[in-house]
Every structure is written in structure tokens, then in C-alpha cells.
Amino acid sequence: MVRYAEELRRGRERAGLTQERAAKRLGLSQGYLSLLENGKRAAQPVDFNVDLRSDAGRVLSSYPAKNGSKESNASGTTYGFVTPINLEGVNPGAYVLHVEARNTATKSTVTRDIPIRVR
Image (cartoon, rainbow, N blue to C red; front, top):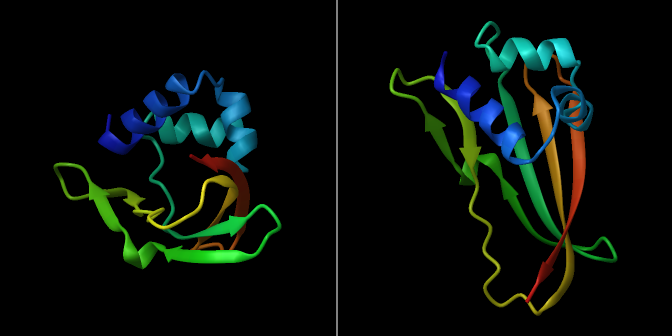
């Protein structure tokens, strides 16, 4: 099994999600997620953008994937991005991480808003 597949499965399991629930949250079918987790399908190329927003929706900072570093397995296959988010100077309070993932092959886009609290 390729490393991204192992990491995908482990991450889902650590989150306590079934394949069905994880697939729904990711905007995928359960069958396709199963193929990814079993290394039978390669992940599609995706561009990411992450915005730190106030709880009122105002964009405070933007972190495009090009600011991140690609994570690769031993064979050099890219399976994800690491995008550091600098919270230095951000006042304590409620914020939203707005994540947008765009499949560069199909041009489809999935967005998620993740509430966070800075202390």
C-alpha cells in the first residue's frame, strides 16, 4: 500500500470516522474513498487555499498551497500539503479556517469552514 493511502486511512480512523462519514465530509463517494485508502486509485491533483477569517467572515490572512511544502513518500509520490498558519499577533477569540480544495483535473471545488478558538 502506498504511503498516502496508509496516512489517509489512519487519519480517518484517528478521527473516529467510518468511510461513509469521511467520504461525505470530503465530498467523495464511499467507494472512491475505499479505492484511495487501498492504494487502487491515485489521489487527484488538488490546489488548496486556506483563509483565516474572523467569526464575522472577514479574511484576515490567506495561505495558498504554494506557501506550503509538498509531503512525499519514499518513491517521491506527493500525497498532501503542509501549509503553516501563522497565528502570531492574532488576538484570542473565535475564528474560522476556510479551506478550499480545487481538483485541477476536474475543476471541481470543495470548501469547508472549520471553527477554531485562539487562546
